[in-house]
Image (cartoon, rainbow, N blue to C red; front, side, top):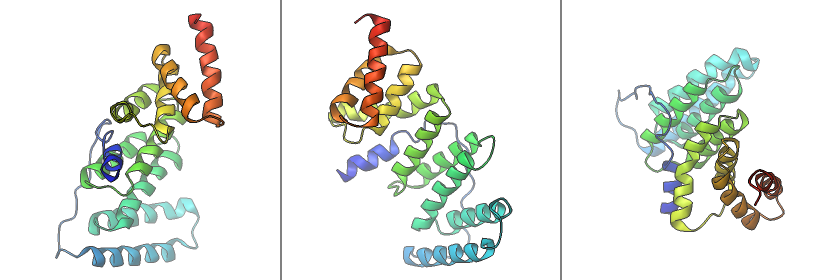
Amino acid sequence: MIKRLILLCLIPAMLVSCKSAPVDQSGPVMTVTEQEEKAMERFKTLLDETRELDRSDAMPLILEGYREVMDKYPDSFLAEESYFRMMTIALHEVYPPKEEEAENLYNEYFRRYKHPQMGMAMNGELARYYYKEMKWEKLAKFTTPFMREYVKSGKYGDTVFLFLYTEAKFHLKDYDEARKGYQIIKRNSAGTRDADIAEQRLEYIRSIQGK
């Protein structure tokens, strides 16, 4: 089960264009415990530095602090969390969203971490962004590896990526593929909002295809 979760974290990781910042390798190598302590100290300092500032005024300091933790203390959990926080800022706290920057952070994260602790959170955040922004081509491509893993294992469990993949296929007018997904969602997620949407989509597909 653990191996499967790791695989689900990793499979879409190289699907978007990527650039990465260099990793700071200077200075003596610290143990993981030392990195955790240093990262926590930096987060506390960052909180003190930005406590009295508006979010917009604090943002340069916040981003600088996150990047420092990522580069200086990469083996700490807060470094992984910093990737997630920076990606969500790029997607949701600037207008227009810095999509390419978020994708670069996403890919840098998965190149750096072989056993990512924030992998599913990173996957989910980027997938939901594509859905919200109606980036159907990107969403279909991003979620396809999850579908392959689902088919291979025969287990769907949490159907969030199945729903997002199926919605992408629906909006791309690949109705045969969408119908398969919505039928699974109805069966596995009965009584949920996703199942209600699936039924509505299936009715529309039947009206289009006449079956």
